[in-house]
Structure formats: C-alpha cells, structure tokens
Image (cartoon, rainbow, N blue to C red; front, top):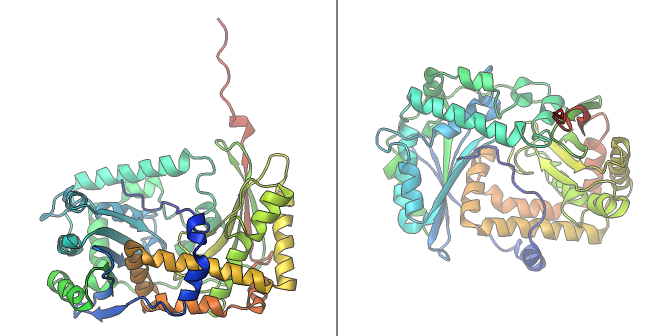
Length: 463
C-alpha cells in the first residue's frame, strides 16, 4: 500500500552518524553535488546528478500539484490520485509497475504534500530504462475505469481509518492544527480527504486531473547515481520527449500573512491515554531572508535530545514525555506556500497545558533576549550540515531532493546553496526570527485531552 501522507521521523541522525558530524560540516564548504539540468521541448525539466561510486540509480518524478491545488469539494483528491497512479495503464496493467521494479532488486513509493506529489524509485543501474519507460507510460495515460477508482477510494478510506480515525491523537498535530491556523481553504482543508468527497470523485474528475496536472510541462524528473548527464538527458528524451505538453491551470493566490490573534482549542480524544499539545506558528515564506535563520532556530529549540526544549522539559522540568517539531508535512526547505512550525508534546497527566506553554514561552523569550552562544550555534549548524550532507549521499534521497528543489525553487542547484545559508546564520539572526515569528498572536494551540466518558466500555451485567 502506498502511504501518501506518512509522517517521517523527526530529529537528528543516529549516534554513529553524529560522530562524523564535524567532518561532514567541514566538507560542506568543498563538497559540491553534481547538478546538470535540461528542459525538453515539451516542458519536462530533467536533472541529473552523476555518482560513479554506486552501481545504483535513484529516480524521482515530481509533479507540481498537491493538496493546495485539488478541486474544492474534493478534499483528498491529490492523495487519491497518487494511489491511482499505481493502478496501471493499457501498456502496463495493474501490478506490472511494482513487479518490474521489485523484481529487478529495486523499490518504489509515492507521497502527496501541499505543493507537490512525488514518485520515487531506486534500483540497480540496469533497471533505469525500464523505470523511465514505466514513468513515461503513466505520464502519457492511465487505465481509468470504475473498478480501479472504487478500489483506491476504499484503500484511501482504510488508510484514513488506520492512520487517523483509529489512532490516538489522530494526526491532529498536522491535520487539525492547519485547519485552525490558516484562513484560506487551499491551506486549511484536510488534504488526507473526507469520506464523502472521496466517494464523490468521478471518472471524469480523475481523467481531467491527469490531463491538467500530470503533463510533462508540470513535472520534473531527477536521476542520481551511476549515469552521466548526457546519458540521462538522452534517456529522458527517448522516453518522455514525445509526450505532448498540456495546458495547466494557473495557481490561485495562497498567500497569508502572519496571524494576529492567538487561537486556542481544546479537543477530546477517545483513544488517547495522556493529554498532548500542538503549538504552531506561521513561518517565513520560501526564499525569504528569514528562512535559514528560522530553520536554525527550529533545531535550537527542538532538534533532538540536545535541544533546549528536550533538555529543559523532558529532562529538566519533566513535564512532558516528548517534544518534536514539524514543518507542516515537509521540511524547512521544500514548501511553496504558507507553512507551520509545530511543536508536538505529550504532557504528563500531573502537568497541565498552561505549564507546558509557559515552559516553551520562557525558552523562546530567552533566545529572543540573549540569542544563542557561539558554541551552541556551532553545534546546531554542525548537526544540520551533517544531516544535509548524509541525506544527499543517499542516491534516492538526492534524486528526490533535487526534483523537489527544481520544482519549488526553479533551481536544483539550491542543494549546493543551503549549506552556505546555514553557515551564514548568526545569533542575531536567530534572535530576530524568534521575536518576529514565535509570538503569541501568531500562535495556534490545540490541547488534545483524553475523553473520560469514552475511556472504557461498561462492564456486562452479571447473570
């Protein structure tokens, strides 16, 4: 089953990786990821990153469509369509895509985010052409029929049951919090999908969505690994070059300013055993001067066990069981519209929401007043650079990152600029963004509390 909205684990790299962090950070100044880019005549952008140290290739196809662009009254449609992309075509019926890639020793997946939908594969170099043929085939056309549509509607609904409706906390830290923090429908609706809207999706809807958003001119393909730029460009032309461009709807205006009044909501949770908080703030726009400083601030606050909030609240005050940070459904670099920085914490029943909020406020206020020390700033930057470089050594992750950056920034070479942006962040920068963004008026809070009335079923009467 493809899990389009699977939330990835947050935090720093494992201990073994962290032991090499300092060396990786030093190498950030000199290691330049190979990036070659070409746009085909039909509008498809191709990015190739050659790496002869591996016998494998990673492929990522990113379409510039996600939850923000799905039709109104069709919440979850982009996610549903991600699943439908694996249902086959006339040339490669259902199941062929998975069998070809896994049979050759590879693996594949897909995911849906607010600003993009991505499809990824990693396999031995010998499987590159079959992968490109399969990706081009489903870009060209899909086998839309009532049976596959009904099947995937049911699959997505079951995914929602398993991951949201029947889970403690139910994703409230990334679904509900956005519904409360944002004003525009494009930003605040549930991209996972409502059962009613999913069931109302028709075959005509599906065909039109593919025609509008899944053309080559709305896509980027990135290939990383054992392939030269000239080989990658030639193969892309061979398999994708004959697919005609299609008119794509002009995106709407999704922009929103910072919030000006704090919002606080209490929700009951029949499955939760302990109360939890989600605290979210709107963050800098992609490409703004505040983006990199805020990314560093996020790590200072909640970037793993060494972070201020973990040390101060989990280890120190011991008023929470955990503290995690989220950047919507992505990360600090791959978003293209209003996004939230969210802190999620399960707090101890003996504590209370006000105390947890106060603990966070005190740490934010300390940063806003004092900044961060040179030693702390160096530690955080080293960890961030180590994570960035180690991630891009992975061929599949590199291909996916390049395709996303090309899609959202219009320049895959941003992959080589981000380390420099991190290095340039000063204590004053961190202070500035803490004061500007992590304010009470810009904050939305959901207090998720166990529902005592639904804690346990009544005992059966004795006979």
